[in-house]
View 1: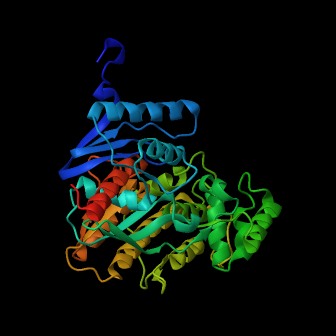
View 2: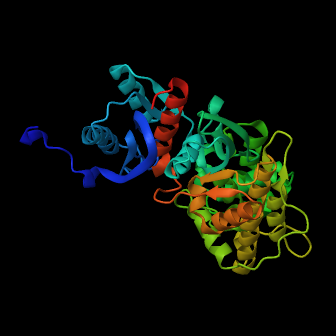
View 3: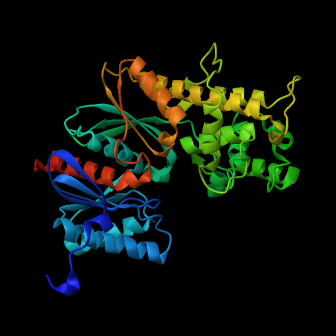
Length: 409
């Protein structure tokens, strides 16, 4: 190699090198959109790049494509396939399609939440497992038929590469679309609408800065009634936002996830909470998980002694903390019950992935609940539970699929 084409410095490109416990064919995976990374599997090792940030600028896209070249040069890999997200509009997907055509190899679309499960299973070298039940909880990932997923119970069989969605969190509307991810009061409004309490909306949210007052609140309600610009989502992140809005915790946030982080801090400050005589959730006949009773309990906290709704901005911190603790513990208990509704065998592996598992209050409660029921939760160790691990999950799922379908390893 000439001096002008010096080998890339691994420390400048690679964040993690993970052992896989067996040899796989060479695979390249290109992640999603947020917190993008690149993964190359070669032999019994997975090389995972540093976090390249979001692929939303020419500079980020240039860095992304240069990192692909550097990773392939560094590892010497000759990929038999390239894995990418299901979303057709991500730059990483378009790149994968072009790369596959140029190389004459398959481009494999790996659903976002399956990739989260693959990242956890791959890190724990569980490729021989015959059946797992995983929880993938985050803000957004595209599902089949353009569905917005984000709170998923998945059955995964690594040894065959098969997977099945048992269900998602009961969908909530997102009034105004993506802006609802940064305005939790909108998700709270959607919860009120779904529970037949829309008549409380003006009292609770008209004073929120940027809501547009009573007319603005009424407009969003009409949008949901007419199904206009109010796409539904099973996102656990948006369920957290609904709880934040109902409790007046950052009803307007500066970035996605800011309000749920504040809610977690409040919950941690209020560890002693009287839970509930009756479950505040319901596993529905279609396999989905409804937390409407839990949201209804939070709505009750936002009422005066006579039951009249209060402006969300007037809730005292102590009441917000009690509601935050109730929400976290109620949701954790619901998630464990949801898993158990599938009658898993004792010791069943339950990988836990997605950005919602950064939340230590939720994570600890879910892990303890699963262990108490005789199951084996798996958490990320070296990798993030969030989107920086997506490329590794894609690569691992693609490699497992390749081996299962072709018998090559």
